[in-house]
Length: 419
Ligand SMILES: Cc1cc2nc3c(=O)[nH]c(=O)nc-3n(C[C@H](O)[C@H](O)[C@H](O)COP(=O)(O)OP(=O)(O)OC[C@H]3O[C@@H](n4cnc5c(N)ncnc54)[C@H](O)[C@@H]3O)c2cc1C
Ligand SMILES: CC(C)=CCC/C(C)=C/CC/C(C)=C/CSC[C@H](N)C(=O)O
Image (cartoon, rainbow, N blue to C red; front, side):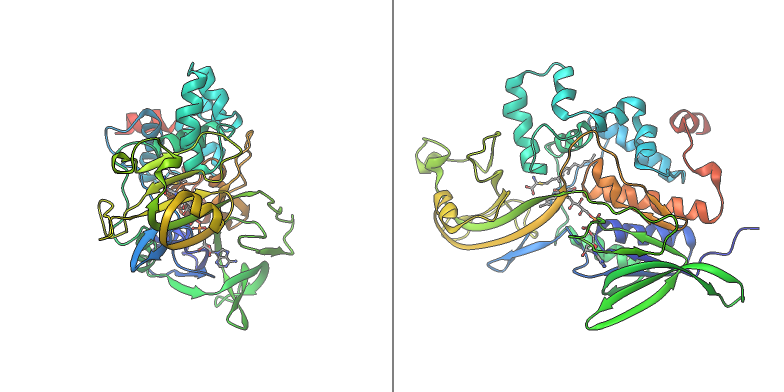
């Protein structure tokens, strides 16, 4: 007899992770489960736009990799996860998931720096310093000391054919929310506590009480399953786990401070090139490691409604700058001859990578799951979506005690012969 589905599931966070989780949980558990999605800010989370002169531009997650038959080996290996997930297999830890994709070699990437990985592969110092370091700086605000796995993800983020969603990537989140028929609860989750409750059947059942603040009110509700889809640290989500036995560990991982600045103006090209202004045609400038620099990268961007960047009537473009600190007016005036608008968005953007990497647990407690441990392998929209699909499958299989669908070894060979 299949077990009756849970009555209620809570998801905390309506970024790409939480909304994908809602979508996959609905697929697995069916139409009768009530799914509540808690969000303290905007749906989309780190997928967000900023407005410059009436046009919206991506300020957070902006580019998506074209997953197709021509992708490079790394992306192909990662592609295996789609196959495993399409056959409903789940993993109970990020490490087991990565091992299933590429064995010990893949897992080993988490424990060594990108520099070590690429030096072993024979790349020259010059290539590493002048090509690879700038890609790491634009994508993850760090250099080659990051782990080899996120380094590989970052390199695929410098591939050709990257794409974005017309109207803004955050639209994916609102559409997933609609498609999953979940209820959005605008509020900030403060506590989660396990309590015993009498259900309608009269049986005492262990449930999770989710306590949240909405406006000036504090409310709470009970759930059979809870998924946390936001980084668990005091600065980003500030959720306390009360009275768990054994206690749920506090995560203190440091997230990288990155500022996105959008500026519409006339670049001071003389600081980048000796060419005459009318011959300067660079649309993207990356930087090598140099502590004197105050930017990581600067590049022309399109609005979310354009395919290609368009100059405005005065010939100026909108430039996106990534920096570690908020740019001062003096710094902006070094970069631009003139500008008519600047808008800044500081982020706790992604983990500060420092191998060897230990990814936080996916299973925090019996029916309490955590998605964002995946970010310690690599932070990207797709990684959050993969983590969400995995957590939904894991929650489903554990609810129904399908042990044969969790942490299966040799899936690649198994699925080859099954097909
Ligand atoms: C500047 C920048 C550029 C990036 N560029 C790219 C890119 O080009 N391509 C790419 O693939 N990735 C990129 N990324 C990474 C990508 O944006 C993230 O990996 C991804 O969006 C994370 O999604 P998430 O749902 O896991 O987390 P989030 O988007 O952070 O979602 C978590 C949500 O939970 C909410 N929340 C937190 N605490 C609570 C609480 N207590 N109660 C209720 N709600 C709560 C938050 O408000 C938030 O909306 C970039 C990130 C940044 C910051
Ligand atoms: C998960 C896989 C296999 C691929 C994802 C590749 C990808 C799109 C990586 C980008 C990750 C990232 C954090 C980029 C930040 S900056 C993005 C862009 N250069 C910009 O200018 O906004």
